[in-house]
Amino acid sequence: MKAALLIPVYQHGEPVARVLEDLAGLGMTCFMIDDGSDGENRERLLKLAVEHPFVSLHRLPANAGKGVALRTGFRLAAHRGYTHVVHLDADGQHCCADVPRFLAAMEAHPEALVLGTPLFDDSVPRPRLAFRQLSRGLVWLATLSFAVEDPLVGFRGVPLAPTLALLDRVKTGDHMEFEPELAVRLVWAGTPMVNLPTRVVYPVGGHSNFDVLWDDLRLAWLYLRLAFGMFLRSPLLLWRRPVAIPAEGP
Image 1 (cartoon, rainbow, N blue to C red):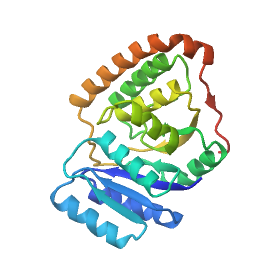
Image 2: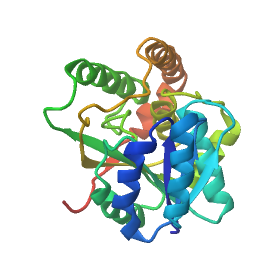
Image 3: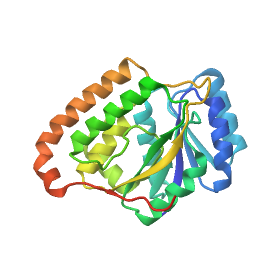
């Protein structure tokens, strides 16, 4: 296994600096995909790439969505010879100290998608928590299983071969709906899942790129399509009965 880090970033020039500081000691290449940040954020990202030699910065010409940024990073990493990526968000929500745990799970199960399962503190907004529970239920329905404990956390270990094979044959969403869609479609394709508990915080004064109106509408349309897809695949899903591989270690 040859793994790299991947961070999609849009207008998070300040918080991603702290994320990169926390990741610097890992000795891993980090693909940072700038999803069309403008002005001060763009300049900050360019400076960070100079300050941190392990960072490979790639800029999209315009803001295209998190799904586009992640797909771009997957293909760049594969082109550079990497077999896996660990991706996490740029806003400081994720615990960088857990990256070695994700790598260990990927080493033990290189064929699996390793999904972060959030351990929230009191900083989590209650409406977000309620919506997350709804999303979990809809994904369980779409897969007829509990293989995906949480479809929304952007901290994941991704096997590139099955992921790119899927992306080559299926058009997926470009925005925040990409991550739950990818998890469901990989379950449908027979990819094993590993769910790894990890601490998730909402930084004070943090800025989210989640568009409450449009991203909620995209997710609603996604879950409707996935439910229809589940009906078409239900005999196979019921026969296969997808389950998650137990995570090892703390």
